[in-house]
Length: 287
Image 1 (cartoon, rainbow, N blue to C red):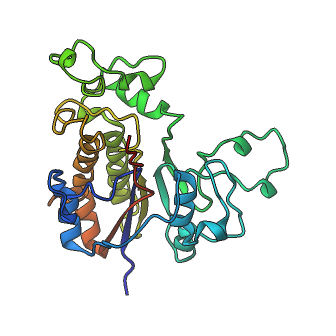
Image 2: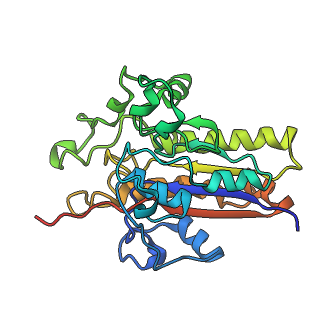
């Protein structure tokens, strides 16, 4: 049987109830609803732990936290465990990463005590070929992409998430309401999507006969909770600040689902298997 192309999507901190296919009374996520309608939605699937690093270790290894023992962001993941990338590579794929995996290197593989990887929880899971590494603390690739498109990028790209205080109506809303200082087409999510589509175009020219495996790891809707214009006012942030960034992220996932898109055209030759996961939901605190 011919091997399928594999598109393995993860999003960060997406609340389980923020999905219209799951019956949410307010949120509308049409792209993800289409993905659910075309496949299987595991309505009783739960993240086994939090925060991001341990949860992703479980997603990547198939193990409970009590077995892989990466109990916090920065807790090393033992190299003795196999993982999804290694298993994919063993059957002939070149599993390629776009985004991040939140992995800290196993100290047994490091001889220099000053190796910076020992203090970094945003390393790459062994087995993946990193095509694009975009982490919470290193947004340099995104910043360069924005600059090429005429965006005035501050010295700290995180400042792009500061509110537009001069935005009309900002003085009549909570501080979280005003949009980001970039538009939706320039978001981190849009950047990652464009990089993947460019990679697929290159493969179509150079390596079209070999099935591909892409792990597309979006950092949103992880904080900061500020959405681009057009998404910033779809829901009341005083009522539920997760909803509008969730919908903005869902917009980008739609690139993988629209007829005629590169990923579907390339997938038709050998079949396309798409799997979308959340590392964990956002915490909800009652005051």
